Amino acid sequence: MEDFLGVLLEQAGSGSVAEAAFLEALANQSILVILRQPPGEGDAAPQKNLVQWQRADGTFLVPLFTETSHVTGSLPAPAKLVRVQMRLLLSVAGVHSYVINPLSPVSWTLTEKHLTVIRAAIAARGLSYESPSREQPWAFESVGDEWFPVARVLANWFTTSGRIDAAYLYRVRRLRTTQSPQVVLAIEESANPALASTLTEIAAQAGAPTAEFVVRFLRDEPSHRAGIDALRLEPFYRRPASD
Image 1: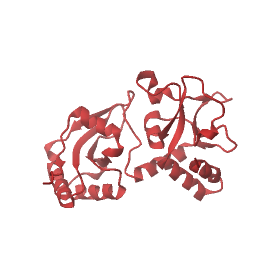
Image 2: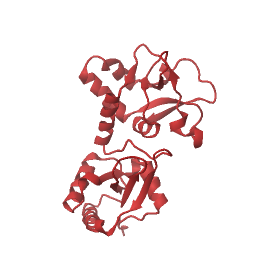
Image 3: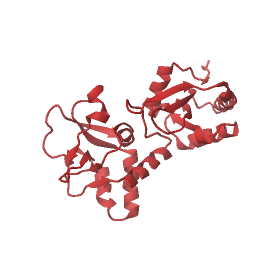
Image 4: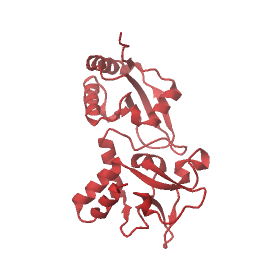
């Protein structure tokens, strides 16, 4: 298999353009991580299960790999090499010092500046790089009647466009953080930045405060899907069944 990310990594040190291309690709690709044991609940949860290596100075790094060819030797059981989307890694693993291909002649340390660029690239695709955890849980709540005018305008647009199967409107509070609550429009659709922009504009024209309104795409957002299921929330719009 061609090591697409590895090639870009080797070129990334040649200048800002090559670095930007590598970080953009990394934001949209998957990466290999080492887990101490197969993923699961409790201590096997990803945020607790990532293997970390200790540097000579006593600090720790999380090793990441673009392909298996950059992993030398075999992993001791029950450790496991797992491929994950970079955005999901950032959402569940939290803040770490990440080093890509640390055993290879060319490696790359992801600084906070790099991670900011990666998060911005993920957000530009209409996706979230956050997910709830035991340390920072999310609370999903129904919205009040004040959001009815926004829901009505959105439902009219969905009916006219005929492209959305179902849509939900709810509030998310990120507990134990200083983040403000967000009202989420979640739709049965794959991530589409242009559609997110259109729907945000429609909602704003209907009176939604854009600072607390966000669009999420359920086919790519398992955390939001799980929250909707837990809340037993019914969609405010569902595409009528065709005859």
